Image (cartoon, rainbow, N blue to C red; front, top):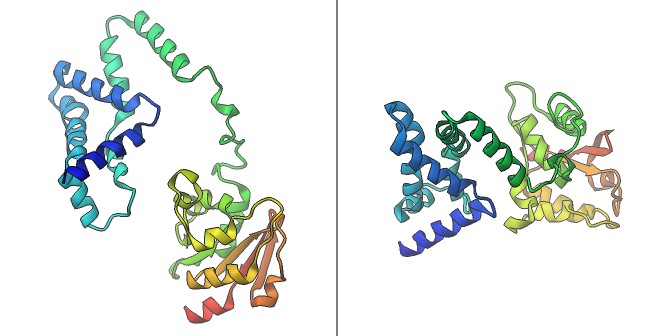
Length: 260
């Protein structure tokens, strides 16, 4: 059990990262617990969040979490139950309730300092929205092509890593052999399909090896980036080309369809 406790501490540190919000939240939750007079607000913003934090560090909580079959490395998601942003915002509003000018100055200063004097929209992770869904048009078009009809069983599709972030956002009836946790380097997970789909610059798709993994994963559809060459014609290996759109070739695998 002591090992679980230290694992919980490490998980909390990883969740905090280099940020101060989780620690600031704890201070704010204690402040709300001490100063708030309205009982239901004290319970929701003070008692319950602190209770969740305390339970998070308890070894038996993690033991139960793993016992019910949750995935490895997902215990940090318990912290998603804690309204950190709401607590911090409410605590600061209460603190500067009668000193609004001072509160405005402090708030502006905090925003500037926490931003690191950098514009978030210059980040490589921020791109201009292509449509009202804020999802790449390529992902939408591919989903509309391969999505099952209403009432039909869900399908599985192997897609290049850059599409993984968006396919499930747009249509949950399309399953993937690997998700974002396999794409992000910090998790260091391994997946056979991802290994074949993740091509280094100048590389090519090894179709035979790719199909060996996608057929093991029962992928009805295989989506290939048209900017990456293939070592052989995918149709010579039994795939059927459905369409080429937005820089991607979408194939159906009849072998998987027959077996399903």
